[in-house]
Image 1 (tube, rainbow, N blue to C red):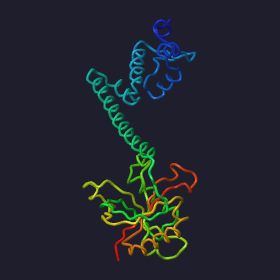
Image 2 (cartoon, rainbow, N blue to C red; image 1 turned 135 degrees about the vertical axis):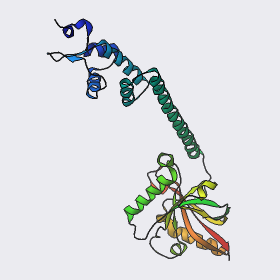
Image 3 (cartoon, helix red, strand yellow; image 1 turned 180 degrees about the vertical axis):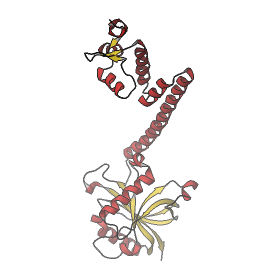
Image 4 (cartoon, helix red, strand yellow; image 1 turned 30 degrees about the vertical axis):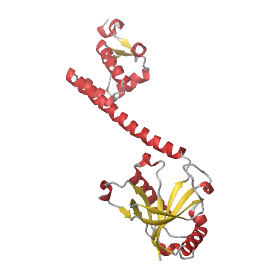
Length: 282
């Protein structure tokens, strides 16, 4: 009887799997990726693992319990030493700290989103209000007249991703801009000139591309429910009457800002939006 035929010095795949609480399929996978291969396979097809492979699997199982990647484990088993082990541990610790920082940032964002959604705001709908607004910075994405519906959706999505960095955009508010000339011309719809979103009023943003300044001044604003395109005729009438009564005239473009939309509602009648425009005394 040869040495390799003796079961006293080798573990079968089932025995080794049971010892470490892994499946035989896991051992097959480790063999397939050259992480841990049996010392030999007998004529009957049984896989046999040596004491050294037992020790290697002990390392693999323990490192995997800390979510160390297969690639990092494979590299370590190829070249192992105390110094390499400490480097491996420090690398994994750094990964964990990065995850903690990312999750802490997510938690802060979620707290802001939750508190904003929870706070009941005293909106007064369909009533023109005259307010004074400080200077605000806006990120703006221009829309061309040749852009069709799909092109505009793509531009809108890219704007959101650039402005709010994907997942952190959950409750960020975006809107669109209409030129003054288009708003006060009677028509079935008003073409979008650009998409916009407000950004923090910090020096760093002023140097970034596609950021524009909305000057401080007097603004006429109206909160309304539903979509703009279902309400624009009534909104234009309210704006015209208010400006005529108060001897005001529009200055610059018109802004429509989404406050609450499909994030909260399936019925567009429940949406909350705000239209606002800079005005001055005649």
